[in-house]
Image (cartoon, rainbow, N blue to C red):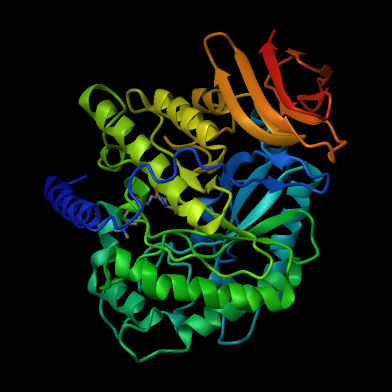
Length: 464
Ligand code: MNI
């Protein structure tokens, strides 16, 4: 990264941090502590803990909007090595609605093929309408050209890439999308109806968990909290209303603004009204020192640990206002940076504490962030991501803690007498359990545990 670029980025970020910190309103850092979290449940009534990867960045620039470096066999490797039960799968609005009001069914067919591949391996799919730098930039925009109204203003590629968000063409395209300019009020309706079209396709498909309405929203010239409280919440409400006309079943995941909230600041999202009360919260986590290219060591480590705590408290507070389960939709870093793998462990610990799901960014092979080499061999990062976890719990989890030192996982839960299905753990290698009767399946990596369906239960799993 060029030095000047870094300075501008650091300046922009410091300013947004100050503004954000100044305007944290009403609900303080500790508002979410002690609240009982909401869980996504399966058809048997078990609480789900969802782990997996994002698939994938290559779809952003692929002409057909599909992942380019990944295939069915690779999903087998993911399932076997990481025990994934969730994937966040990137959708491209440009592929879905190539002309206003015309939807490309062949694109949805391709998406459906991938959904089936994941389903055959027991992996649920969260569909994510992915934008990055919505504007005239060629790669990674996500939106169709007809919906990208940038008035001919430019948005040249930047280093660091995030500065592309503050280029004139990008700012203008966002301002028109949110209708801050009052000139293109129909764009948000297109967006909402496009989502309803996706929902019509997948409403009855049990392999699809739900819809992540917009990747890393940015308000253009409208700053953080007013943007979230106003047009972003409005878009989510409008899109939820459209989706619920055709789908009263799937989870609808909302993301906060990226800038600031990715670093642990509070979100200003308003609760979304949903007749079926199935709104999930899917924020991202990218601590600022990591964004700026540092590792997880020394004083940066101290700062990042503070970010993790602030992020946990802010996210918990927002989720509680919405009664929403939490899925960390993205976290990731260059795993070759010093201490990077310890950061991965730290995120596992914090999200377990919160009973949140997590999907790592991303499954693209052959770069520093990837759990796979270009030859698709697992990296050290893949082994760090492969922690044992309770996938499905016959009640409500109270404590879920994996201790890498003793190689022991402790699950405490309040048993639900109505749930007859067993609690299920995924383990990277064979393990034993106390507190219930376990059956280990080498093939799937699943330890299935029967325990009495009353009271508070403690299951302790130890890897052999
Ligand atoms: O770090 C970001 C990010 C920084 C700054 C901004 N703005 C200035 C609006 C927005 C986002 N994003 C992190 C990751 N998210 C994408 C995919 O969603 C990944 O490529 C990034 O690494």
